[in-house]
Length: 367
Image (cartoon, rainbow, N blue to C red; front, side):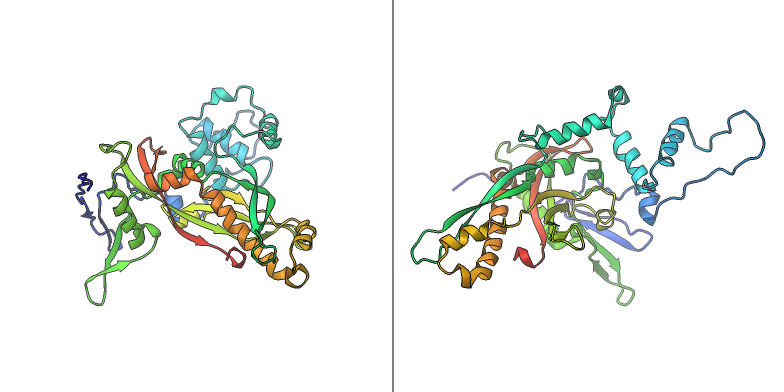
């Protein structure tokens, strides 16, 4: 019997009720609360109105005084209000908050910047070369087993080309190191309010990070001892993964379609995930369709292809989905799922992140 024991001490506490009479109960004291300071624009969920200066009469040659706080803001707003009209307030805020104010942003690195050249470098990654970016899309073929319709005969291995995918571990790393991770909840909690009828505490359910499922999983990872460093003092946190996929038609009058799989994180509030420009959604895979030439191949190898074509195609699509997920849940992800992955998060703190799949929303074909 293993003599190693893991002693866990609950350091939970209860917060004071806020102005709405709502309070939290933590099982473990959190190191960080993303709701401690929420910008006003996030609370009201609407774009701020840009202040426009009144036009002035007169032919004075002196420049009009700026209505902005400084020259930098004036230049940003001048760029925003010229050219294409599709630059919303939310996009401008994201440019400034997530990129210009990023600690790694250095204006001197843009001395010889050319957008066309940089886009050509990105496009060149598709020319059969392995991408130097760990979170870039890769291309592969997926093998599925198709029965031949002959008793005791081995299945035919059919290769489906055109799978574009990103490694799940790389996507998780990108999410937890990006600026949006500043809104992640690393410590789940229970939410309560006082019932106006009974006067007793009443549980509130609003997000995944105030659910029993998240709290139970968080408790389990706190009790696990890292195999590589039993004395590690890094904070342990759950990456609450949410997958979603659906076949999408690209045009109204043709059959062209796209079948993406998205990954989001339940550590993030649904109100932020639902914002179009939040950057919360990660594209992880584009599922290929069965190629047209499957008809030519299957009619030669399957004894009952003419009478069972529809059922066989349905079977192949189902096998394709399973094969793709077997492909995505690779050794790196399974190792991270079991033993965690160490990530230096956006706030500069190294944490042990445990990926957990909480939900997968699909449509009929994925069954």
